[in-house]
Image 1 (cartoon, rainbow, N blue to C red):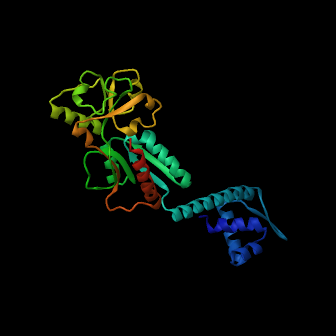
Image 2: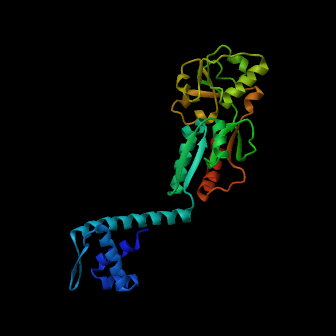
Image 3: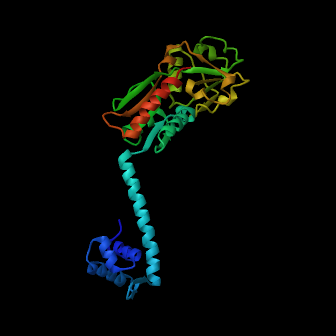
Length: 300
């Protein structure tokens, strides 16, 4: 990492003698002397005072020695880091996720995995389901987690959990005591929905079209948890997945009622990797870990 001349220079600094430096470096004293001469010619001033019993640094030599020593230490630190990464493989796990998973589930899963694997690093990108699939397909993310209603042939699905859409409402809402609701029963209540790029909105629009209904939501956002704080004490109904509500501070004041409409049951959670692509060991370990975590968390 450092030049031969600099390495010889530092050895003379450490030993105080060209002869002793040559012994440590397993070269002839004349070779060490030539390298020191090259350095002095390069900087234009003597780096040592030649004494009968050894070499003593000049002012310029002390300045160069401080710099060279720091550079050598930094080079050794970098080499050590490279050796460690080589032994562990790539320790940064790149994840793409829709925001419903990022809020609570993934952050908690990453923290638990980090306690077991101290060297792991995470990079998480949050976006819509199509963007999650694109990032995995293009190799920008090792693992993708999203809601979906269809498979992508470019991607391998490692976990597939049912993820029906629920009607989320205040526990005192007139519909809260029902075992299930039909979309027709939402006509009299203000609705909070995701935008057109979310699977919730896509399934809801399909369901309404099949039922011959037109329901205009009162609240629309690409962030599905944005309106949950409005629900306690109000008649607003939000359409969302169970995981979005799980862990929210006001979750105990809400209830999740399933839909009887079959269209609202057609969504799944997918954990994805690129088809035919082997993950680095750390990412592969997190894939197994997060699959187990999802299996437990996705059950209402």
